[in-house]
Length: 208
Image 1 (cartoon, rainbow, N blue to C red):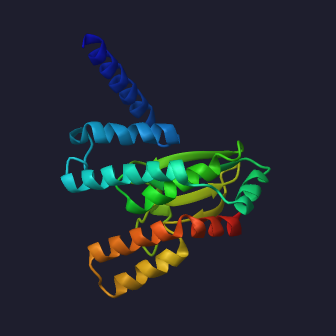
Image 2: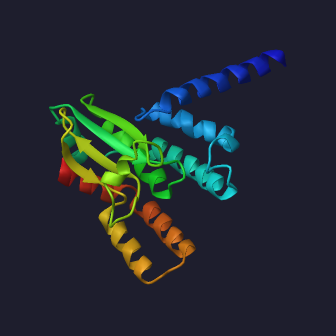
Image 3: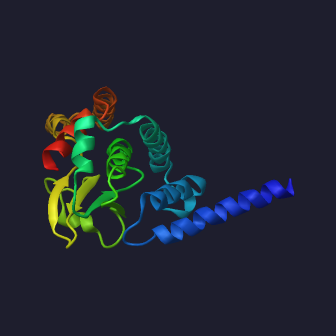
């Protein structure tokens, strides 16, 4: 029993250590995962997750994100294009654990970036300094996830997000129709499940 408790303490300290590293301007995906796990382990320490509604979003998003990490496969056309990138790029991804769209797109982007060692994927939290999202608004809003692709001298090459354009049109139409939040949430989730990552790959193929 003592050994089990010690193992638990060691694991928790490890997560805390990773989170301290992650609590910076940018983090690697592994650090983001550690931050996410720390929230789920002790939500009271991480506002707004002390709010049960935000915590429930985070729990659901954790499950969806991990499902995509296991199942998502980059198609051959996009894979070839990513592998062909010959100059260093930074893929800077702005997100938050509570974001429903991010639960689908973030793991797909992670899988894409991993195909080429010249692509460095960094994650910034939307609601933490330096609030980079304020420079990349969508129709005046701070919608996420938002991906900024930069060259090795920090110049923006292209920007993607917060969701595939086909879905963005659906979102904008439903918003104009003043549909309820629940209706919109269900429609977006159904779209992601049916699309299976095809549209985001099509859009990345056009940009790369």
